Length: 368
Image (cartoon, one colour):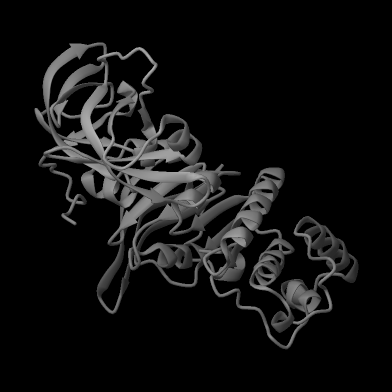
């Protein structure tokens, strides 16, 4: 069984918002929806929930089309970005609101209140009002209010965006644990790439209301289908190159920035390509190590070292023609004595040298 969308489209005031969205999400998996602001991510959730009516296409779950059903009939939970808690109700009253509206028996209400508040670690907050809760606590209450209704599909619209970094991390870990334990089918909208990679079994990237690419997090972030996707997923290193030799066994020799790199990821027919390499896929060559000319890149110097979150830095490398961005740990920078103006050698595996057509026909690959 799966949640299936078939050519779902939405217009508002004759303006196209979603255009022929199609995907299949198996039960118990998490689909993360990524895209720029205005790409249609939230509207997609609202259409699935029944809050907006799609003009065409079908939304299928359990073998039946949900498109004609009301939101109440769809058994779909929605956690909004702004929590949407009732300010005059306590935590307990907010959580039980839906069950009481359904006139659920008191025993059922008590049972599921205990289950969800224990799982979400908010059982000590039952008598507090929303104004007395932190942002993370309010988000847990909003999630609990959905979970007590036991929805078959759970939709979350940027649930962690208003929280500080530490709260985001804690709640993401908790949601992932609960999702795995109860095999909740989930659509999860976010702008955060780390959240997408952590939460998602699959990632759906949308742009201007259309599906650009769908696949595992590894596919989306390491094997983009267009230059637009590569930029959106912060590939950072997108360099002009040329395929010099197709070596068989799914390999090619690519000339880029004066280096000859072996690639095992070049789904292109032409010779002129964009070479995409993520900054975390490079490694610095230690002075004491034996150098190999296989995917060894020389002739770069360190232009600047930019601190990142945690114990990571982003190292900008320059030569006469190109710039490369490389992630490294603070420990690696210290151990190898990496300083500005040092000349360095770096290496990258052939599987991480991903090639795209230089002038792709893909209509979604619009210029920056």
